[in-house]
Length: 281
Image (cartoon, rainbow, N blue to C red; front, side, top):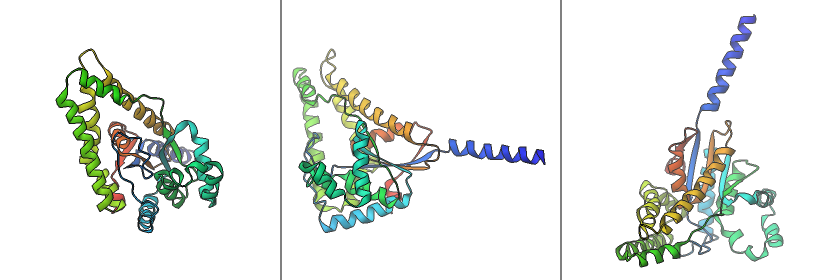
């Protein structure tokens, strides 16, 4: 009897260890900003996110995301304002999100809080998945001296590189604005998460911005290092928050961020990347 008990304990301990070492399935959902605040380098047109057509697309999208079964959802919200996100999500779960926003955030009630992908997509998917919390991961104590980088290129007479950067930005604007006017929301998100789009998002920094300036000017490299730092800090929050029992997790952020997260996750034994196309099919 004693030997049987010890064997059972050993088996249970072994099973627990295996459960802890099994990588969590990580779904990276890169997106554009639904409310289009105009803060990015590229200037994009707006999608009528509140239209009945797009709202129905969001219902279908979030139903499939919730069916994926995420134990945690991470979003591009300031990590140092988790309490603020908690209050918003609690109001959403209680069915009084609009009233809460109008009372506490009246200036953004009809724009940011009404349209942003965190509330339209992540909150909706979280509620359907039965989650009681959405996790904030954004870190904004970094610098993004884009104008200084452009000036460094001009000073170094890097005319070809400057034109290449400007052409890249214009190309992205043209491509994305075409998608916004011709594709459905699911089609846009699938396009944003293809291998080609992911490579395109990453190439801007190392292939172009990092080359800026003379050999004694590192404005370009500094901007790239700040971009990496911001994303590494964000990723570290995910690493520290995901528990061994969280077998599936979803991260929703701008496609530039998720392109970086993919690079990190590919070298992280704690995660197994899941493709969006397989979840939405």
